[in-house]
Length: 201
Image 1: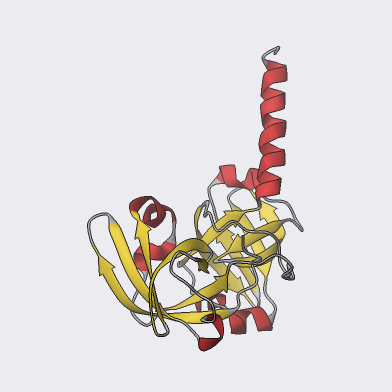
Image 2: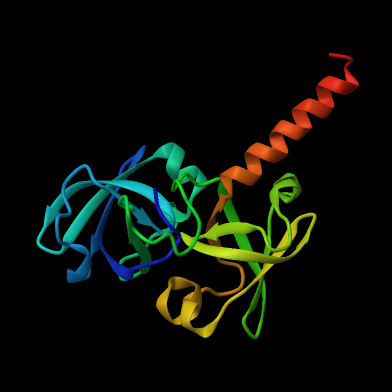
């Protein structure tokens, strides 16, 4: 589990692509290295990834085709910064909201006005978006401000833009989206119940 509070930024230093696998290496800040082991889970731009190897401060991960198709990992470049969060431990402060690191899909940045960012998304996602509801973008726990079918907006404080990769994003670029799981469960349950009622079951 993760909290949606980005701890540090890492830098992509190696990328190896095959037909169905992406192997990449992230240069970690020293502060995130203590007790990090192979097999540990780390949030990379919001994506739950498993550590495969550790060589000094260079930490490697593998991403399969299913992950690549749903996330921004397929567009990684050498030197690119990524948001990092180690998995939460019992007793840690949950500063954001609980995240699994299982990405729902990608969404495109449509507009930036001051610190207000507008994103486009499939209209069926809008079922799970409510003003003041939770969303995670590139692993950052955020509060939705305005929601419309196919669009939503979030406001960023300068500190968030300074400490995460969202400050580098340009219009037309994509971010990873994790929908709040509790909201999704509630909405899906209500829709199933209404469908069953309409079918007379």
